[in-house]
Image (cartoon, rainbow, N blue to C red; front, side):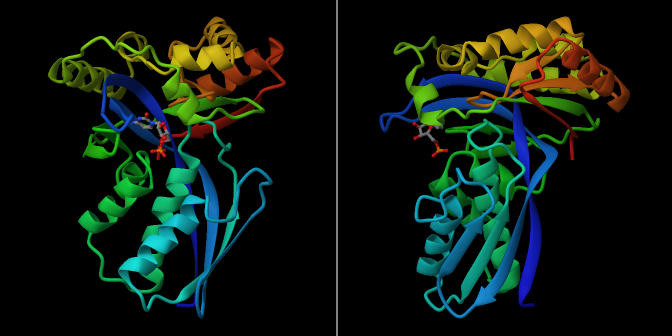
Length: 292
Ligand code: C5P
């Protein structure tokens, strides 16, 4: 095999709670990751040595700052005789949108390199590399459509979603820095009891499986929404508009700014898009996608 094409999906966070803070500055989280059909394309071609990355999106750095390049360096350290690779990244996932695009790219690149070079690397070792690359990377290394993330969001407990959902993503033309949003959280956090939250979140996910979006929504929160509103006050307005347009479950994903509305059927999602367009949210890009 000389080359390989893979598709790297986005995620949304159905729920995200900040449960504390580590001494190194990272926050302790409990979050529900849900994989969606919006995806980037990555083409890998074997070369003799090193990595050459190119991307069709002007805002994606193709140098050492890119997680794909960092992932290659990590693999190369582990396998000093590793061959080279040319990577062509075609972006569909909004950059800095709270949809985990960069993390997914790094995770799928690692999986593709394992296949391309037949590397004998265990799931456990890949997870450890993923964790070092970024908090959202491990979720994408699990072959599951949904999971609960604890620790920094990097310890995954799979929790398969049984019902396919439809999502309308409301995409802003500018991104948000995850770091800035986390840094804007209040300095003192209310202590939360992990066992209780875990139970609440599990019940809410099973309500989702039963198509009860209204009740599920009552239990889900995103603690990063308020700090993100400070940077982008329009996120709050967009959420309110989406609710007025008839969506029963609207939330910001991750550290934002992307907002998503959840539906049980594609027809409902399409009606919602028409209504939203009539309400002049047109300057935001709307993307229809579904659970995978
Ligand atoms: O892990 P990742 O590099 O994606 O995180 C980006 C930034 O978000 C970190 O540098 C940190 O400031 C913040 N973060 C955090 N707690 C987490 C995850 C991310 O404070 N659990």
